[in-house]
Amino acid sequence: MQNNPPLTFGPVNSRRFGISLGIDLSPFTKQCNFDCLYCELQGSKTVNNQNNIVEVDKYIQAVKDRLIQDNSIEVITLTANGEPTLYPYLEKLVDELNQIKQHRKLLILTNSSLIYKESVFRTLQKIDIVKLSLDCATKKCFTKLDRLDKSLNYQDIIDGIITFSKVFNNDLVIEVLFVDGINNNDDEINKIYDILKLINPTRIDIGTIDRPPAYDVKPIGYEDLRSISDKFSGLNISIAHKKQVQLNKSMNETDILNLLDKRPQTKEDIANLLDIKSKVLFDNLVENDKIIIRNQAGVEFYVKGR
Image (cartoon, rainbow, N blue to C red; front, side):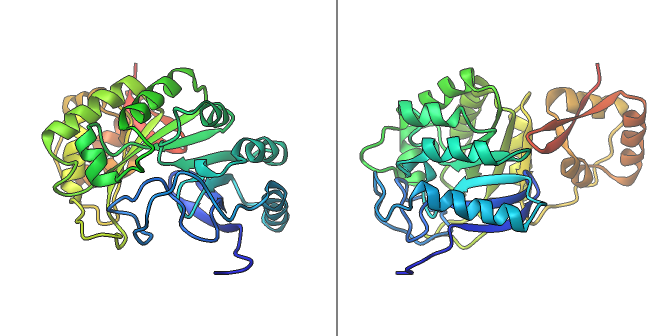
């Protein structure tokens, strides 16, 4: 075990959040209450509390040092070699980070598992951008894909996310990661969609496995993600996929406006979807304000003008 592991990492240039300085709330070893099949870390036994805890003042000093060294940082990201909401002093850390962050945004990446707990629920409301994972809608899927610790109940997690979305006033991002043969069937997709409509987050990032997983599971293709995004009508969907495909579709003005009325599109979506002639038409619609651009938690979406 490393005696003095780094408490921060980066900064990295995140396409969806900007230049981000990461804070690792489990720097010694993986500590998570999920054992997800697709995890990029090695598989491990789930835990419901942390050991090897780093004091808040050490994190604060580490962040201060990095902010002095690099003034390009736009986002401070709370994450972990596992699940960050297991960190027992999270609220104190968030309070102190909010005092020193200045113009920067505070972001957390969490699997949503403890959102139903009062202390976590309260703490997350103090963060500028909350990104929650929601891969499943059913107990069968949660059990098979996310492999929850026995202390957790999947329905508590879903209900907690929905309740949180009703009171949270900042940017709420939901991430759904699809794994072939597990949560990409029509029934699970439709049930996830029903939950997402209740949440109505600022943005939804859908993706699949793009790094070596802990277990023998397979990703789905870009075309499949595109098809799923079309089913999530009326929501701001951002597709995260390294190997995107140029679809080269021909669309007229009515087709384009109907598409945007059904589902806002990112710049990447449009770049991958339209053929050259349709892109020229699209740009003209933007210039004439028939299409407008809205920034949703750091990602620009094209929407139909009013």
